[in-house]
Length: 559
Image 1 (cartoon, rainbow, N blue to C red):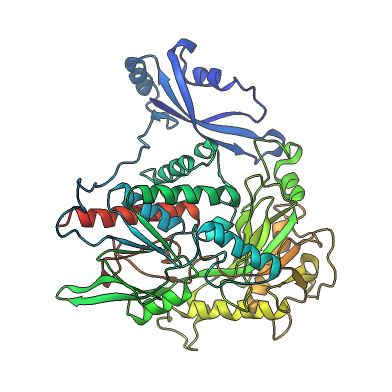
Image 2: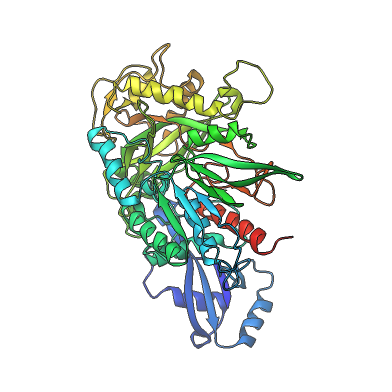
């Protein structure tokens, strides 16, 4: 088959216009084009008055000789090439009866059942390795009830919330299914294919920036769990790992299992750490046990809300509301005079701002959308990048930063947000116009904030009691009018800032080698967002696949 990329057609092209466009591009007769499939469809909205759809299509031709002739004719054309193999190929497979032997090896453990843990467990199960998954939170149905308990009644369950439980933090998000990671093996295709098998709409396989939303993710996660169990895997909920069993050997330290909060010990020589970025108590335990980790940069800021109609008009002009385009998103960056970078993060078209704390008496925000993306407001994080030197707690000017210092820094601002919100997990907020003028907001305008349990208007920049460090406040204050030049209406006075956004990524990295194992504990596989190797559903899923492959190869093809 041949693949054509960058095949451009007008937004409102006829439904049957794609086939003749392919025939014209290849210079063949209609009869020579046996069939075609759309691999990807995106849009180019840089010129709002003439938005263009861009297709990648795979073409089946009438004969192999014609395909060879076309490849030769278009040899210098980078947009006509052979269709690559995007199928997934397992690196190894357990032989029949692998666990039926007299002395079967201990089963691999996967700690955490978010996107990374789900795909690590799924690949291990599909390889015949029968993983045991240990998830500290509850199953996704009960977890959803507990999460709504925080949003509606202000009642937090520290073990069952936006951060902890089946599906991970990605369950309560926009459900974005795209990533900018390098993907030469098309592992993102494997992730999308498994999601479609679990009930996602097939359009996620070809639309640009696909998403599925919270409600659909819930049912998909349940189906993926069922497949893992059908293949011999085991999922255990409310099973918090309180310790790791590490043994010294002549060639260094080796993982030998884990201890649960109940006191139960589970032996294993292969453990995947798919913790998520908020497992602070587990990070602390691993640090105390000497597992190598290091501080890393992350970002902090607020959620901003505008009417979705403002964003649609700014991005799409007269084409706003077109069914193919859907609700508009944006991606913004500003380099402030104080040297800080301010950027939009996790933009949620037609969504809501949600309470995402996992610890008592702290406030954390995040964004969420349903598949329809039809809520009134658009929201996004507006965050400032920080580095370990910004948050070190020992007061030193240089030297290594304690990997746990980032968590301490996050807690300072999350506790401050709880105080400024006046308790009950209400979030502190301000109107953008007041924020730019450095004054207290007193009444909401035309933009009604979506965060529940509620938003308390205040002065986010109180002297000596600000909601963020001064350098972050200064950078965001400068960035908001700058973003207006890219999206008309962005700095509208009535837009709402809600704080604080602190869990943009893990504040530490549990460093691993090329074999995906911890630098100093063999058999321990740090993975996903919590370990500092992913950001979002897709990259976490891909990392889970790669870690499972490394683990499986180590078990089945030992050197």
